[in-house]
Image 1 (tube, rainbow, N blue to C red):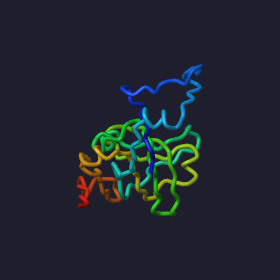
Image 2 (cartoon, rainbow, N blue to C red):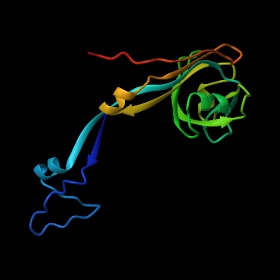
Image 3 (cartoon, rainbow, N blue to C red):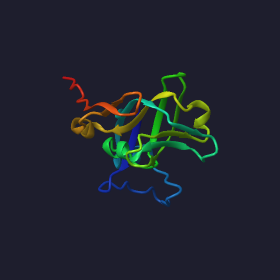
Image 4 (cartoon, one colour):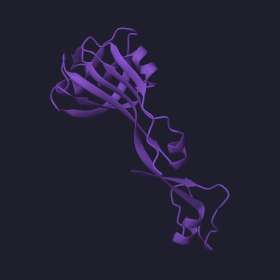
Length: 167
C-alpha cells in the first residue's frame, strides 16, 4: 500500500512568528500540517496481464527493458517505458523492468540487457502492469485487461475482469 499526500490549496497554515517557509525547508507544527494535508490511501491493483507469452529473443547487449509487439501494447494500454513485472513460468524467476514497443503485428517478445540472464528465448512468461488507485478511482475501476496467449504468441482469449464489489 502507498499513501498519497496532497497539499490543500485552500488551507495554508499560519507561520509561527519569525518562521520562514521555503520549498526546501517546510517546518510546520504537527497541528499546522494536519490542517493543510489530505492523506489518501492508495491500493495497488493489476491493470493489465499478458499470460503465457513465449519469448522470441533475448539480447544481453541491449541496454535493458522488455520488448512487446506494439499491437499488443496498444490493446492492453501499456505505454512505452511503463513499468512491467515479468514472471518466468519456465524458471520461476521474477523481475521488474519497463516495456518498449517492437514491430507492430510481429508477435515478438524480447528480453533485453540484464533481464536476458533471467528470461531466455523460448521461455514462457507472464507480463503484468499495476496501478495505484485511491478510493474514488477504485469505484470507477473496470478491472484488468487480460490476454491469454498460445505457444505461437496469438491471443487465445481476451477479457476485462470486473472487480468484485465488497459490501
